[in-house]
Amino acid sequence: MHQEVSLIATVAVSFVCAAIFGYVADRLRLPPLVGYLIAGIAMGPMTPGFVADAALASQLAEMGVILLMFGVGLHFSTADLLAVRGIAVPGAIARIVIVTLLGVGLASWWGWSLGAGIVLGLSLSVASTVVLLKALEERNLLNSASGRVAVGWLIVEDLAMVLALVLLPAVAELLGGSATSGLTHGAGLPLPLTIALTLLKVGAFAVMAIFLGPKIVPWLLTLVARTGSRELFTLTVLAIALGIAFGSAEIFGVSFALGAFFAGVVMSESNLSHRAAADSLPLQNAFSVLFFVSVGMLFDPSILVRQPMAVISALALIIVGKTIISFLIVVLLRYPIGMALTVSGGLAQIGEFSFILASLGVTLGLLPTDGQDIILASAIISIILNPLVCAGAEMLHIRVHAKWPGVSNHFGRRRQEALGRELEKIRASNEAREHQHQLEMQELIETFPLFAKVDEDSQEELLLLFRPKSALPGERVIRKGDRGDGLYFLSSGAVEVQLPGGPIPLEPGAFFGEMALLSGGRRTADVVAVDFCQFFVLERRDFNMFAAKHPILRQAVTEMARERTEMNVMRQKRDEPSTIDS
Image 1: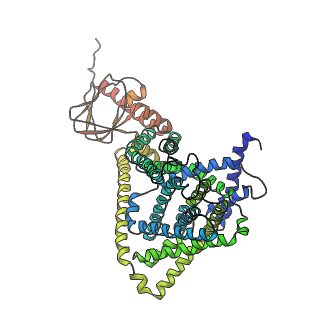
Image 2 (image 1 turned 180 degrees about the vertical axis):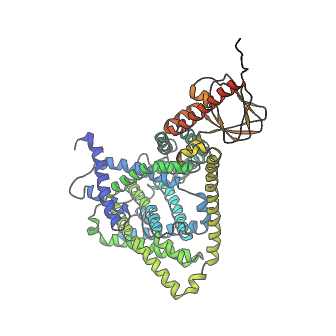
Image 3 (image 1 turned 90 degrees about the vertical axis):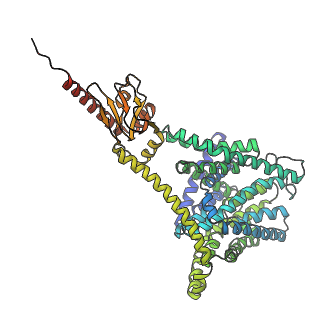
């Protein structure tokens, strides 16, 4: 393959193979990412046939990690996490610690170093977001109390893994690895000072992102959204994500993944976060697929023959160990048995962060290559078996409820009711915010029926384009002879258009200023407020841009301008003194 087309070949074959194997996996009722991983295995150097460029694939995978972490940050909800903090925070931390210790013990049994054991344990302790969400959606549990707890638990695990990604390079040499250039900072300093320096840089970056980000990013998104260009808005979202990720790595020395995560968190505070998520989702999905494919390319299937007991041991820790640990933690925290079974079953697998940690461990010289293969093999098998684990947990819950209904109904009931009230408050708050937005849209349409001619997305775009303006009684809103700077929509109050034949009153729902806007000439009359008035102003450039995409709106405004011109002409003719021929 010629070097100049190796990128095209790698991307093209990756997408084709991922689409085929992903479809097969879906037909087998498995998460599509299983198909993506198998596609990577088929393209890797360990299997016959086409072999993709591993160097290019690793860079594409890095891009996938950035966009994956950006998506995690974009959907991060502080309110949801605080609602389930009583179970998610202690539960996730306790399980990470226990599973990591068990991973260290497992690695010690295999004759590995402490550093390898820590990387193995951390990799086996965290579950896959993609797999969990799919499992909850299929069982219609995503918005239930158990589902929200599982998602909150996973958020805490993700945050812990972000911290692990930051700290592992700093302690790599102490754990028997190597300080790879670009991954550690402060080489040659004592370990406590190195860790302190690393945390200080991360803290400085976090403070800047948290305090400056919400002021700059929403303003920038709104500014770009006002242009009405969807591709420019999408480009800005990606530029913010990749720019913050790259800048944080260059300036603060933190990982691309952490920078991308904070970029998503900052953007989630914007009112346009849902649109940013929707517009960037296709690219996130595309590069996420390339990430999973590249992970599969690194996998050596012969590990199943060379070290079957190691794979079985890791798999037992993931499916059996993590399930039992999660169940006991939830029960000890005095939450219902049904919730314990749902959480433990859904989290009995590993995924994205496991791959990232394993790759970092190999790069730092902490984890042997066989360790990465064991983690990959365990991930693929645990993801394949997860639907069966979830179904088994559900059947067990039914049997427990049938055999011990009192225990099933009353154990942890008080905690569950308190959690239900917290979640209900959040749901009510979200619904109120959504209802308020719908009311704004409904009020816009009721006040200005003209806008009913455009679709809902375009109505939201109009809300961004409008500039609010107010006027006091007697204030001149438009002056005769001025250039037409915009179109005025009267939402409350009343104005009068001062014409030679007498003033014409306009009430809420009317618009004015369209004649000079359409003709490019100057204002032909004064418009004076006769009450306290509120306007929405659509500036000339914004009107021309929006009307170009919605000709029906321009046609309606033009028709209204023509009718008003005819009425004004008729008024002038009627009011002119009649002349008598002599």
